[in-house]
Length: 289
Image 1 (cartoon, rainbow, N blue to C red):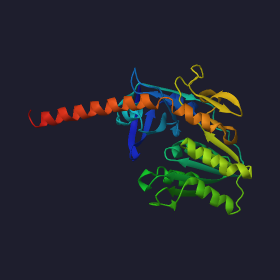
Image 2 (cartoon, rainbow, N blue to C red):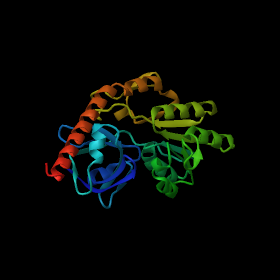
Image 3 (cartoon, one colour):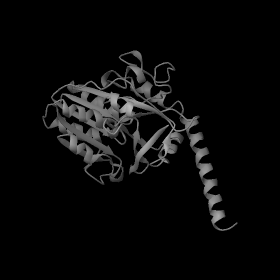
Image 4 (tube, helix red, strand yellow):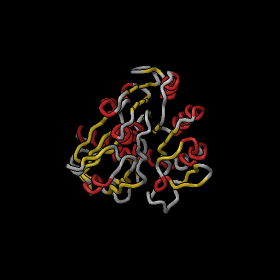
């Protein structure tokens, strides 16, 4: 059991957890992840380690409540416990002084990009961050990114904050300004990562993406996280999660990511119906029925 030391919402349905996990805190490196199980019979959820504190023995994860398991996780509060936290898993990010490095996070992908962006700055790179969200209330970690990068650009789809447009538009603008870009790290929805790969491809800019397909065991044995990179089959949980964006078969990855859509919707509907029934019962009790 892993105790939740802190828990707070950063945006609607996006929650930050600081968890007591000293062994993981000591060993984790940027780019690695943990697999979390809320209960004995719960789904295994892969989550990037956003940060760690070796002195206090804690790790930080940021969770977007989308499906049944992530919504269950986001219902937990400070002082409660998570059944299992396994890690660190996956290969660490390759860090060196590339020159100028751009880290791009779309939505909760900003939390995944954060530890690598921090390490790139510490390695001596000039660092630029682009944070993308649908609207102002969904922007996360802006101040944290400002503390660890040289430039931060916020984009919103609806123009409610920062640059009105997509992260790809801002990236094109930076490239078009004549600034030499040596590395792009892009993490977010698969269509976003695919679009960024196509922006950088004509310029030959080294581009890395962190893939998040279906994972089950996190050790490469189940084969659930198969992806095609450079026309070869890889297991993202052990061979990645970071890969050369220009070699990723995004079409196949998108299809694999949709494999369990129907099952996930059914599970989520079950939880919603249960919550509605529970709320109705509480209301009846309050009215003395």
